[in-house]
Length: 216
Length: 226
Image (tube, rainbow over the protein chains, first blue to last red):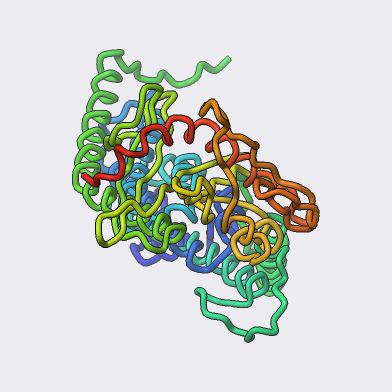
């Protein structure tokens, strides 16, 4: 690291500047699949946050013990471990939630935000900043999921967190809770964020926007 | 020509050691969490199962899982049903009398497997209730099988009587086009949700065809609750 980064900046990085969903466009598989309701979105986001923080902590702790030839294998084993932990924990807490999230809890393993963070950040930083950065990223991910999930639930079911908003005469916009709705709402949010960024770059021409990555 | 900077070579032993260390740490974490959550997970499963069985058999107060094997029926263990066996649930009322049988049927619907739980009355040899275990059918269309009153009327007394040889059903359960139900073993499909309706019929038929010939000759075993 050329310039020292404060712990606060590490934390805020993923929350806003490098938000995994709206800026880096990473981890699109759970983003589109589980955001049919706000509560699903939050649960998925928090599960991912836990896996992210715990695996980045362990990766960072072991960063001098892992030879670089076997680092990807090591990271995947560590990430898979914490996904298994979350899988059991959610089963123990609520089977309804477990059914709602379905295969997507296990698919956290394949979420590229996780491997990306382990490789790009945790492997090069001490445990504290690595964990803080991972928590910021995880909460940024949760925030992104919640933004999509809330819009989809309001339009597609006329409710928020299961509480009906518009009374019995509301005709739900069913496509919003179907897969296409996920794409529509994500696109809508990306437009909002792109417009916001463009306005900002016009004000400060030297500030270049960060590049987008591939999805999962 | 510039040669790339020399990278230190890691010995195989070091790699194996590192992977072994990580595998050991991860193994301990996973086993630890499994042990800690096992009781809560099993308790949750039991509650979820009872809730579903009680929904299709309103009079029931307790549930016992059984496996229907080739040679008869036996109380089920903690694991999944062995190959070839069919898992079913005997439900008892407050007085300890057999209130009915619940069993699962599954078939491919519009989006994914539609898994239903049906209640079976061994005295009248009819299906008396329907619940859904899991489905991913289209909201507002396929998921009507849960709420459509006319459709649920099919499962008040759906005929699944065995044939005289006790090997198959006398009449296979069949989903027919909306409005054309003529026999007690037919299911009147929901108009607009035919694929899901048919999946329900197929799931029940397949499950009943394999389960009932094994279950009904041994039904006396279940009348004495354990």
